[in-house]
Structure formats: structure tokens, C-alpha cells
Image (cartoon, rainbow, N blue to C red; front, side, top):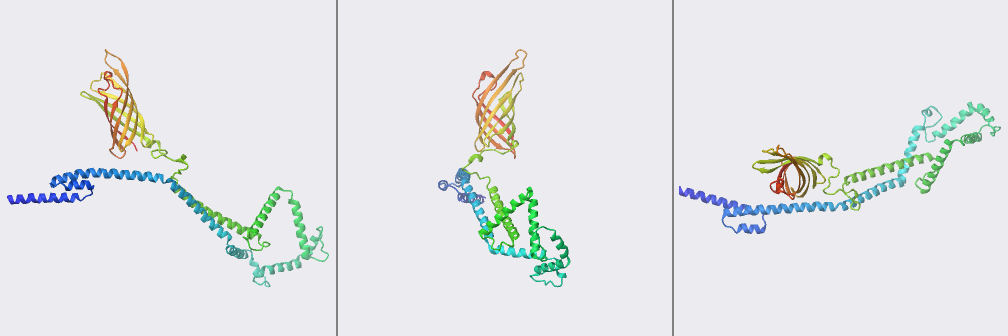
Length: 432
């Protein structure tokens, strides 16, 4: 039996030693590792390791928090660099899009292809189907000239007598030598003259005339720039149409560039320009948060005396001025086993977060002490000024608890409200 017991003790001792050796391999500071390795007793070695591990872990956690806090500050300070990057991207996008438009506008081959395609479309639209029914018109590139000549011949055959009579009634038209191109040209000029005289005094004509002059001016400018290397005598309308197409394409291209710039600006809209801090939001600010998210509802209780039991029950409503500051109102009522005295009142409080889960607490209190006995009917108003420190802790998602140790700077034993200047308040609140 003794050999078995001895073997069991040796195995336990060996297992404990191995566990201790494995644990010392974990990450510790060099100083802590030396302290652990200097201990020979495995049990003491393990206890020492656990103690140093807890200490070094706390240091490491503090170091990590400091690192990420500095990292966050570095990101905030880099906002100026991000703003400059946005301006640079804006300028580059504008330059690239404008270069595309200029290349398209100055490319004469692009324009020539457009003109040829336009001619083909016009030929398809303007060529009447009846042309194919005229037997002596050849369907080639000169079909339009052949058609005009054929029309003139038919007109001379059928309507020449009627036309001659009409022309004779027009002043200034001579048809003694017959109807020819000169007579027709004279009629056209006469018609233009009469039409101009009729419309010259109307407002609509003046507006059209001004628009025509502006169009001619634009046409001359374009021709002078060499962007339309085609004879201007025959395709004024086509040039205007093609120019309009170019302007539409330019507008569409610029619009695409502006849309891209808008997306970039919306992406970096939260980066504040360090040269203009008028729109900046402070790190601890709650600007833009809804009022409902800023409200804090809750209450607390204070054990004034334990024998007999005296409790102060308080309802509270607070408002977050920022991520650190909270102010609010409290209504208090005292519950005691002996109810000959009634104590109730209100408080103004202000809390400020000074560290993680710790806050500075301050209160201004005014209590009404009222005597209920038949022998004495009196009420006193007793002020209070409290300040101290508190700690918060989370209970559930939006339910938080807190405990605060406060000192009453106006404490007076003769007032009979508090039996000592130090007060401990336990409370809870609901907030987002």
C-alpha cells in the first residue's frame, strides 16, 4: 500500500511540476519570468506565476488601450490630409473628363463620319417612293437632279399658260421673252421682299431675326476656329445639328464627371477641413442625436440609518449634454419605521465621466422636514451640497447600475436629516 501511495504522490508532484513549467512558457515580462524561474517549489512557482500573469496582463491591456487611443487621435489629425486628397481627386477627375471632351471635339475624322452618316439618313428620308415609278429617272447618285428637271418639264407643259397669266399681274416681272429661270428667280426675290416688308414691324420677326444673327455669328466663329472643315455654303443646318450633338455629348460627359465627384464628396463628407472648423463636430459631442437618445430615466436609494431602518427613495431624469456630461433633476422621499417626521424634496445633479466607468458626481439638495405630532407642528427647509465619485456598471443592454460615494459639505447633526456627512447612493438608469 505504501509503495502505491508513494507512486501516486510522485506522479502528482511530477504533473504539477510539468504544469508549472508549461505555464511559465506563456508570455510574461522578462523580469517576471526570472522571478518565476528562481522559485524551485512547484506550488509556490505556480502561485507566483498566476500573480505575475495577472499583473502583466493588466499592464498589457492598459498598453493596448493607450495604443488604440493614440491611433484614434492620429486618424482625427489626418483629416486635413484626407481633405487635400479629396480636392486632388476632384481636380484630376475634372481634367480627365474635359480632356475627353476636347479630344472628341477636335477630332475631324469623328466629325466627318458623323456628316456622312447624316447624309445617308437624309437620303433615306427625303427620297420619295414615287421616284421609282418614273421610268426615265435613273436610281443613281443624281436622282435628285433628274427629278427636279423632270418636274420643271412637266410644269412647263401643264401650268405654263396659267403661270404666265399670274406672272403678268406681278409688278416688275417681265415675261415677254417667255418663262425661264430668270422669271422664276425674279418672283422669288419679289416674294421675299413683300414678306420682309409685311413682317418687318412685328415683334416675333424681330426675335427671329436676332436669333438668326446670333446663329450666323456662332457659325462664323466655328468656321474661323477650323473645327468644321466643310464648305459652309451648303450644309449650314447640318453643321448646326452636328454642333448641337457635340455640345450634348460634352454635357453628358461633364455630367458623368460631376456625378463621380459627387460620389467622392459624399464618401468623404464626414472628414472635416482643418482650415474651416465651423462645421466640425467635437469628439465628445452629441450634436445631431435625437432627444430621446439623450434622456436618462432611473432612480436610486440611500440607506440613511440601519437601526431603525430609514431609506431615501429617489426618482431621476437626466439629459446628456455630451458623451461625458449629464445633468438632471431628482425627487426624493424618505421612508422610515417611525413616521412622525416627513422628509421629502428635490435635487439638481451633474455628473462628469472622468475615466472608464468612473464619474464625478455633484448634487444640490433642498429637503423639507415636517413634524406630524400634535404637540409640534412645524416644517424646516434644509439645504445640502454633495460631491464625490461614482462607478457605473452594465446590467443588461440598456439598463445600467451605479453606486456613488458623496460627501455633504453642509452637514449639520442638529438638522436631524443625515447622521453623518458621508452618503452612499445605489441607483439604476435606462439609457441608449
